[in-house]
Every structure is written in structure tokens, then in C-alpha cells.
Length: 101
Length: 419
Image (cartoon, rainbow over all chains, first blue to last red; front, side):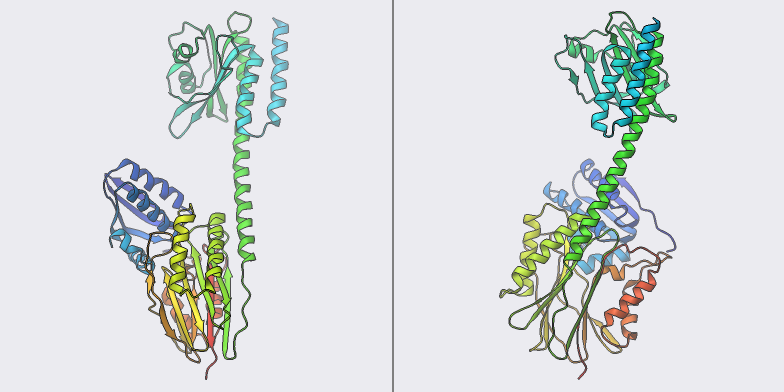
């Protein structure tokens, strides 16, 4: 990749899709978006990370926090798809299990 | 009439002088109301600030000096849409309104709530370089009559000063915030530097090397060497997911807890379990920590690992490099009751064991490409001698040439001389 891949998100009821690079420079915005989505939905939140070209540990921390909020409410977080980089990160850190992968 | 105008102008000049000295937003708003009433000789005033994002006016502060109203300074929390009430009309048109109490546009809620009767109202937009910042209102001149066009002109001039003062205070807030951030990062960097451990003395044939380079947005990479009384050596790398002071503080808590448990009979997996509980129970943060602990028993020529979500250690000897498949559990601070296992590995003469942090694999070059695991393996395979980490660091430096690091880089290596 030659230049930074800006992140975008879309929301369709309980289905969230994130795209692009998610690193420490944008995680505060991603966090606001995700926590907002958690508030506005009910039941299990489904997250598509198939087009996330990069996720760093701060991005992972945001996912873990969203999951924690959902779990405290008796709900859950399910990752329906993940890009190769995200899969690698999940596998390396073992957190894939937490997201149903 | 002339003297009244003179008095207004004098008050305006005084207001200007006062506002030029004000620095903080919380102090500024009450002062603006006081001055608005002063220059127009009004009994009551209010200021609403414009929320650009939501395109509404938010009620910021009100003041009423009439005996009818119990509270002098009123604070409310309601919003007005563009075109709603006098204030909304002024905000929408950006034109001042001077009207009497019978004007149908007046929003009656405040009057009903306070028992105050609006007789004459003056409302002006607060602008700065064509940007709407809010509106200011004054109600009922003290002398019992109505506001005049001169009052309107004076309040408009005052609104101009208010606009400048508001913008200045916002700029100052932004600067202050930036300063606060810089101080925080500097403090975190000091903490980080203070905890850099000394390389321990090693028995004949055994060597050690380590380095930790914090990124500009300093994170929480920690490492340590803890020589035990029985001759073993506890080493580890920890990586706190997060940046800044919070992450640095969690890093020091981990450092201190590992130190206090290292000398006990505890296994590396036992230490991870205790750390996990500490992070979950004692810390408020939403931070997790990856840790790889390696305990060297030089006499037995072995090393015992326990790993919480960290990069696997690499074992290098000239020409070959392999990732060690050590048992790995979740990073610390995520779930209760995570189980960790110990993995025992032999370290033979000529072999080197390298712990690294993901600042290495995730280092960007100018073309925004990651260094990656493959390059790490290739580099280590080609490097001529231990400490291999030094060659890796040099390669990553070259890779990143000119680019500021986005993450801490930490390397810790223990190796044995060849037989």
C-alpha cells in the first residue's frame, strides 16, 4: 500500500462493517462509533472486518472494550469476517476465541 | 441622550479592556453577561452558544438582576433550533432584533418559569469572521423604558468583542490541551527511561543484550532482567496496548508485580495468572497487556516460557531461525481465570533466543509498507553473529529511515557461545 488507507464504517441494524486502517491515530473515532452502535442496537452485534487492511493493538483494545460493554448487558460481539492481517493478529494474541473465530 | 451614549461608549471600551485579559471559558461567559448588561443598562441577559455540528443553539448562561427572580445567575440546559424564538431567528438570519415583550416570536418558557416579564428585548448575533458563535440577549432597560437603536448598535459592537474573546478562549483551550498532552508524554517518557534495566552479569559462555526504543507517542513496552538467588534469570517483554501516561503507569505496575513475585517459587505461568487478576481487579483501564516471560536456568541449560498473547520467541543460530511454538494464552486484563501453561525448551551452545515486540514487525517505511514477519526471519537468517537483535534493529532503523516510529521497539536476547 502506498498511502494510508482511511477507515470507514457502515451500520445496518446489528451489522457493522469496518474498512481501512485502524491504528492509534483513529481509534478514538472508531471507539465512539462502535460504542454508539452498541447503544443503538440490541442483541448480538455482528462485525465484519473483512476489509480492515490494518488493525493495531489500540484497535484491538477498542474491540475488546465493545465486547466487554456488550457482555455486561447480556449481549455479545461476533466477528463474521476478518482480513488476513486481522486473522493473524487474532491468532497471535489468541483473542479470536473471544469473537467467535 | 449624548451623555448616555458617551457613557455607553466608555463602558464598551472598559469591556474591551477586561475581555482582552480573560483567558478561560468558564470565567468568560459570566463576565460577558455582566458586561452586556452594563453597556446596555439592562436588568437581565443571556448567552447561547452555537453548536455547529448539530446546528442548534445551546443555552449557556443567563443572568437576571430583577427582584422577581430568586436566582441571580441561572443555568439551564435546553436547545433552540434555527428560527425558534427570537434567539433562533437571530442565529438563522444573523441579523439583530430589537423588539417589545409582545412580539410573537418570543419564547415564553423562561418568563413562565421565573415570573419575570419581558418588556423590551434586544438580541444580537455573535460572529467571528462570518462564523456564527452564538447569540447574546439583553432584557428590560433599568430605567423602565424600551431599548433604542443606539443600544442595539452598542450591543452589536459588544458582540464583536465577545466573538473575539470566545475565539481566543477556544484557541487557548486548544493550546492548553496540547500542552497538557506534551507534559503527559514527557512524564511517560521519564517513567519509561527510569525503568530501563541494567544488563545482568552472566555466567561464562552466556550473554545478554536488550534494547527498548519508545515511539514519539510513547507506549507501554517494558522489559526486565531479574537475577534470582539460585542463579536463574527471569526475563520478559511486556507490551501495554495503549499510549501515553495511562499505558506507562500500567507498565510500571506490571514491572513492579513481576519483580515482587519473580523470586518466589512461582512458575512463569503462575506469575501471568497473578498479573491477569491484578489488571482485571485493580485497574480501571480498558488496557490489555501482552507478556512473554522467559526464565533461564543456565545450570540446566534450559529456558521456561509462559506467554500471554505476545509474539512467539525466536531461536536463532547461524543460518537458521525458527519460531518457538510456546503455549500462549490470552493477553492479560481481558478475561477472568485464563489458564497459562509453562513450556520448557533447551538452549544449546551457539543458540540465541530472541524476544521482540510488535513495533518491529509493524514498523512502517516511507511507502507505508510494514516490515513484517517474513523480513524479520530473512534478516535473522542472514545475520552473521549474536546478538542478532542488533542486526535486526539496524535493519528496521534503515527501513524506517526518516519516518517517526508508530510503536515502541523492544528486543531482548540471551545467547550461548558456540561450543
